[in-house]
Image 1 (cartoon, one colour):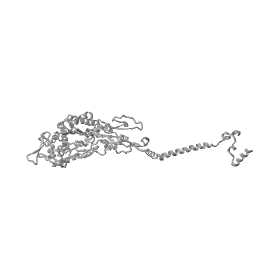
Image 2 (cartoon, one colour):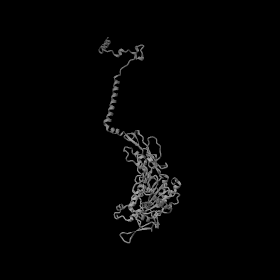
Image 3 (cartoon, rainbow, N blue to C red):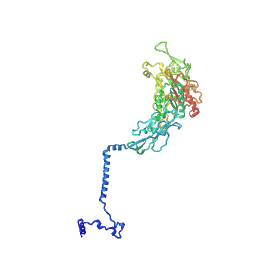
Image 4 (cartoon, rainbow, N blue to C red):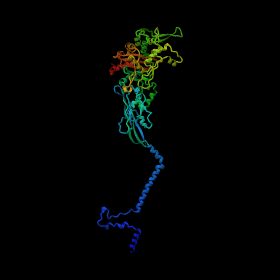
Length: 586
């Protein structure tokens, strides 16, 4: 048959049996096992299906190629820069700064948590932490204690690394700029925390991971009693305002340990205003204030000491055998010195009053200038100390040295002598006996700081032991004992001077303190500044029989007609302490 012949011919040509010739149609295979795929016919994919699959893979490869071209060639530099900007950075988080406390544990400086994101005033709202928020600690200060110039303030730390975010650097990485905040900055600062952050090219946070935890700063306990200090500041400020003084400083010191019980200066700035830095008008006011509230007058104020120098001159005269304590000197309200160039003419050095006959005790009590002219420069058969020995004893008491108090900015006092005189007065370089007279009553070129006079008053009270004043109670910060040396003058001479200072309170220039229940010994001083102004001083100690504390007060540049000054402040303070802090009056 033609069909059969054709089929056999095709088989012979292919020499293989086609699949459809081996597998029978499932309909014609009885008893097939479906689970074993018996009786089922599988057909190959059609050519059209294969073409569709091929077109799909070709399109995918084309898209991948075009995307690679765009990323690597067309916009390669853009995406490279963007990738570089997506980087890992080390971020330093500021630690909690250590607090400062007074001797009784009262807060003087502490931290409060605030948001700085939208802060426009000095009173941002207190918030709580809720994970990663724009928050930080704000430094807070006791505004009533009168300690701003001592505590200091904070400012931006310009030494922190530049990669630290500006907002963090402004609010967190601050350093002490003045006072104890600066002096003990390392201890107070603590250790910053470190974390790794990933940010994108726009500065957005992608991820973060803590690397090292920070450590809080150490707390510091002061020797200062905040209540006493606050009252002293209030009295200083009010007296200066009411009596026309331009400023002043005051110190109370433990004469056995060197601890500072109170220390203040007037005027002063507000530590919180400077640390927060937003009240620009107040800050500008501080900067333009002619009375200079940034000057810590306790350590950097320079003043002529006036008559508070007289106990030192008395000790020097006793130790040098110039005069005995009970030797009477007849004073006439002045000392006249013959003019060496004009015969018959005299230069007259006036006393503030004619005191008549005085011995050393009374001379200290009434502050006789004529008596100290005599034992200082010589007169009426008494040869006097002379300027060289005056300078020698002033140096023995540390008048030309820093006391070593734990504050920056302390300056040294100035002791007059012929060399300095010639330098300051080139038109009149010769040192004359009148210059020695002026030095003997604390005038001329004598310049001292209140902290020097606080140490001096303590040395008079403890009979010659010079102490290093300190504001910190924690021994780990100062380590060594505070005694510097002992003045080599017999203690019986100190007894003479102490008795004369007690008489000043009982019947002399410090009589305003006589009504106190505690026995105080003291010495007043009125140092002239030209003919227009005076500085009003008081130094003293208590209790007289067994001294424990000394007090030093100076009010600067007041009217010479005013009779209210250093003694008044000291009297008011000790009167207040008798009832409010009796523990210091024993």
